[in-house]
Length: 233
Image (cartoon, rainbow, N blue to C red; front, side, top):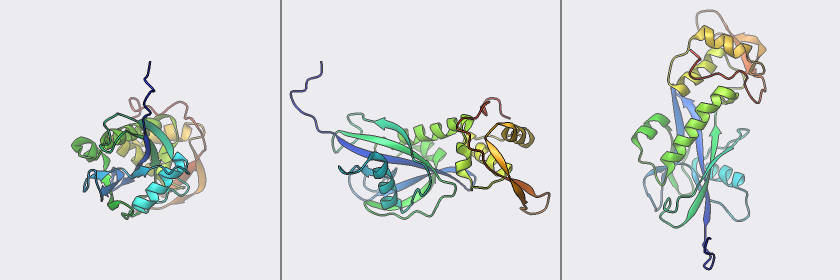
């Protein structure tokens, strides 16, 4: 039985794993902390939830205040909750993390209690570590959630513009999964998966060669059959 004779005070924060594909790499949006604890160290954008706001509104506000990046029409997806007793040296703090995917990494600008903001290669951050609090673990969970969702949802289309070529979409999968994919096989699977992509009716030219057909997301909530990482080559 839990002893409730002495009330415990919990604070609630939000942290945002914002991802984009930039310069052929998966990048995460980070802020350099301007105050204690972890002054001068890199962390995910986030902060304390005001008593009068929802968790979602707090995530949107903190992202805008600390990085000047607005989610706009981008959907924020709740990732997980983190509540280890020692995760924050200021006291017992529970964080609700969110995942956001942006088609192009807008230029961030540090604000509020963030000294600087920048896009950083996610794989380097995960390999090197050194993020404040438990943000390396949160980032790892966000990256794996995104990589897994590429198999069974249209999440990859959120990394590109509203209209895109299959080659641009394939580039997202290659960056996210870290391996080359056969162009012909990928094109067949993508265009034959019901509801994944639909033709726009026009093409675009990117230099010499045959113009590439443009597509947009077809609206499917679930891709069937899924684009399995182990089988798609």
